[in-house]
Length: 169
Image (cartoon, rainbow, N blue to C red):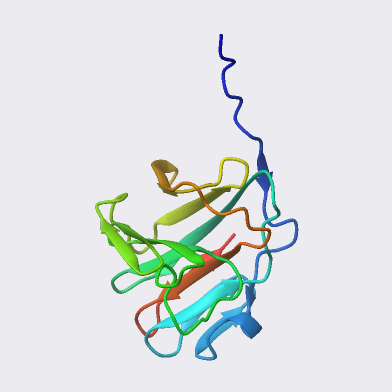
């Protein structure tokens, strides 16, 4: 008989206070500790920390001020902050309008629409090689499976409109 699969424990991420990395983010984002906002339209911010090769990792993005939609996900180096997450081969993203993307291929109908004041939880299961999202604690299911065995995935967010603001925790 086959043994039931035991879920991997969730590793609290990060072990340090979550912040954005100005060196790996667009120059047009305004970063203050865990908060990022746009000074112009179409800006990308990348987190300062990376997830390890094993375990389950989570982070949360609170949509503090959002005019329309944004993109939330993870990236692996090398990553160009001039492109939205999901547009590059080494990025996976959820669009808060209700779609997901990887390597420039977008799929409508994943998850639910999200907006201002919502909190998006991102779960990276490095053991099962999956990426999933939740809105305000409600799981939207696995968005991506068969992630490559990468040792350096970082949080990323792409904001579309000037003044859009998110907070990471």
